[in-house]
Image (cartoon, rainbow, N blue to C red):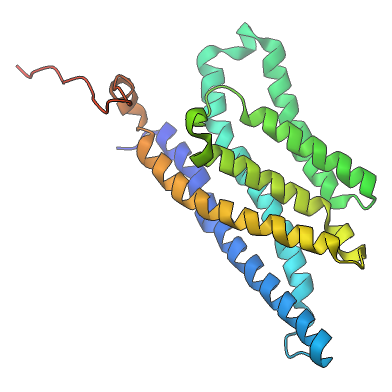
Length: 238
């Protein structure tokens, strides 16, 4: 039986599966078609692939970057504010509480401005602010991170992929303006890494859903010794 807290836990993976991953598939498809069209034009001077695929790839890529940042915020918000409410942080440490709220404003505001910024300086500033604020939020207490196994951590894979999406959003203008194609190569390389991270996200996210107990099971599950894989025996029924 799922409690309301358990239903909230499903919002992040549900949106990732129904929104983010389909967009990833479409972006990859448009990226491949864009590349094929560019190669055909260079070799034969013409291509059957419509010229609009490049713009479709750009628009979908922008949607993907925003949706990844959004789903990252969803993933960290529920456990973070659950911990905040438990500790009554607004009373015990009001400065930290206000700082956390400010980081949300900086993350979302910087992302919005990053979409609008044209000059390289401002794109760099807003991308840095957005990424830095997101990292600060992600490192708050209460978030399931697997720090001892960071190399197979859903959390660390997700933060890295999100930062790559923010960076990709920041260099869009450079890709189109650079005639040497260096930025295009950087974009393709980093986003190939991001694709691998997204695949890993699907695997590690499924694993974590199996490992994180339901809210009504926590009091018993967290008594277990995870190193020896043993749990206390239940009290005998009378």
